[in-house]
Image (cartoon, rainbow, N blue to C red; front, side, top):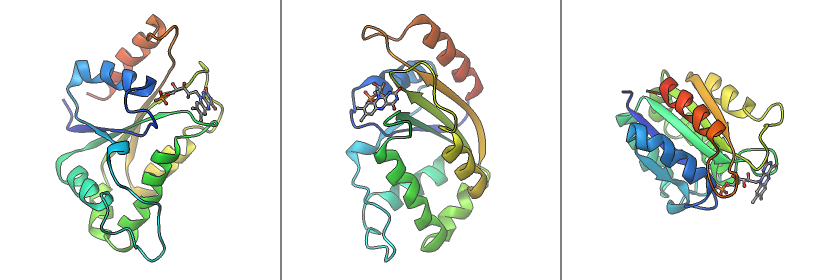
Length: 168
Ligand SMILES: Cc1cc2nc3c(=O)[nH]c(=O)nc-3n(C[C@H](O)[C@H](O)[C@H](O)COP(=O)(O)O)c2cc1C
């Protein structure tokens, strides 16, 4: 089993994306960090946010884990704003905390998305893949999910089971 952490970036801590990651966690026991429970400000050119929760969280991630699994709802064809804010803050790791940026190199990335549509539009994964490339991370897997009548349909359960095998 890899040392992995799931970063939940939804506006609903107990919503549909959360249901998907619980399915994965039942099989893997991977820990979850809910970005909604963290105080992580937008990227600031003067790094005025350097005392918020971002740097301690990154420190924990690069020290203890080898794989980051980002879990996001699809909001307006893209990752959620809360997750994008987290991605913007990677820039802190390239400027004021280069030590953290260096440790991201060689780590792995995977993505779980949840939308109302069964298909993602082209390009949804591009910011993840290119960010992984830029940071020297390895993009290893993704899975797109949806809910039907409040439940995870069997088709999605199968996709999540296959995904779980890829990230173990
Ligand atoms: C602001 C907003 C924008 C959305 N945009 C899309 C979209 O572009 N494509 C899509 O398939 N679903 C869209 N949805 C539906 C959500 O992606 C879907 O219901 C998702 O599973 C919600 O996960 P959550 O409960 O973690 O927020 C949108 C929902 C919201 C609230």
